[in-house]
Amino acid sequence: MVIKHVSRWLFLILVGFSSMLTTYGFYVNITFIDSAVKQGAVCLDGSPPAYHWDMGSGEGINNWLVHIEGGGWCNNVTSCHARSGTRLGSSKKMVEQVAFSGILHNQPQYNPDFYNWNRIRVRYCDGASFTGDVEKVNPKTNLHFRGARIFRAVVDELLEKGMIFADNAILSGCSAGGLTSILHCDEFKALLPSSTTVKCLADAGYFINTRDLLGTRRLEAFYDEVVKTHVLSYSFAEVEALISLKF
Image (cartoon, rainbow, N blue to C red; front, side, top):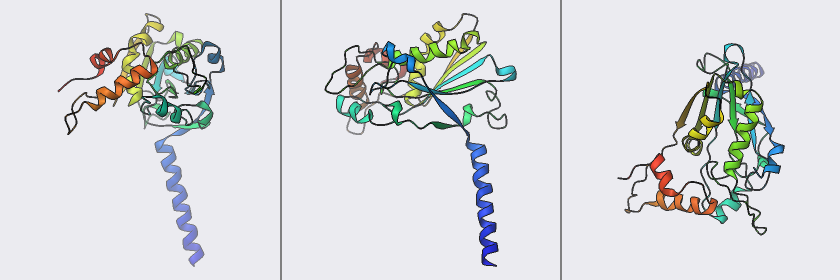
């Protein structure tokens, strides 16, 4: 009798787990852009950039959704060095598969607008929302600040794989990825044909430059360190003008 009840509970648990997987996503294999290494478009540790792509179908075959994952930033050599030993700084540490859910899902009941589009999740491994571009590498740290090159390498690869024929293209991102979608929106549009309708979606990528309880603008100081560390093509003032308000 006890065994029968245990078996029933195990069955219900398995059914529930299967239902959760269906609802919350399915797994997509990783693609490494090994050719990007020659261009210097590499993660913090010098490893190649990567992305996951679930191919579109039917009426969505010529529509593309490029989603940038989040993961904060590193603002100095110490934090960037620590980050380079994780999936947020090295493709060597990334898992082979990630779950596609939400706007990346492939089922219309969970993602009615984009389920049959080409859906891409770009892995985040530079620590500065894909904006750094420092040619010289310090041999003592072996840190590569090349986020801007990674962004271009990923877009170029997707263009070669069919995005050049896109009717519609969306650049989206969450958190640090949301900031990426803001900072790179114009560049993304410029790299696509003029006939392509381009939109950008920043999900939680807007960071207000306000004072904390002690009256300090910590966010401003933090971003200033990010800019100086990664030698961004954007100054802090330009970033602030794009994404924040002072209060």
